[in-house]
Image (cartoon, rainbow, N blue to C red; front, side, top):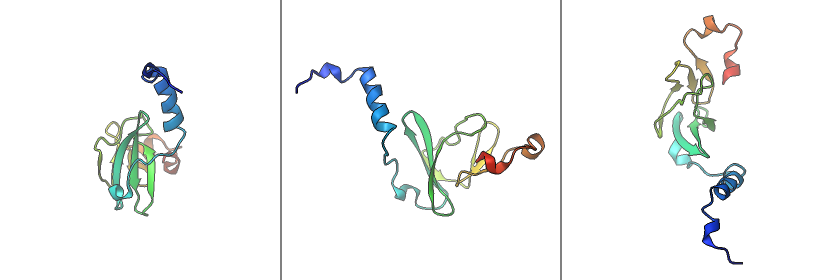
Length: 120
């Protein structure tokens, strides 16, 4: 079956293929050697969203959206590195390499009804 090449660059076709391929199927986004040690991380753009891959102190690699849960601010701008804590530049909320919410300024006084473990 022969098709003219004008079918391929259509924005609608691109969006349909992107949805079918990049959101429905698993993909390799990093090699384990890029995050070989505890607290190593890499940031990748996946389907228009920033993803943060981090190796925890337990040796497990986890993937998160690279945003603070509070206001959606990007946590990490660097493409890779090693961090003990990921700190939101907007309100200073902090998360560890396992994705657990650690603290925010005045958290205990300002949000007494919230449990930190529910915000990871």
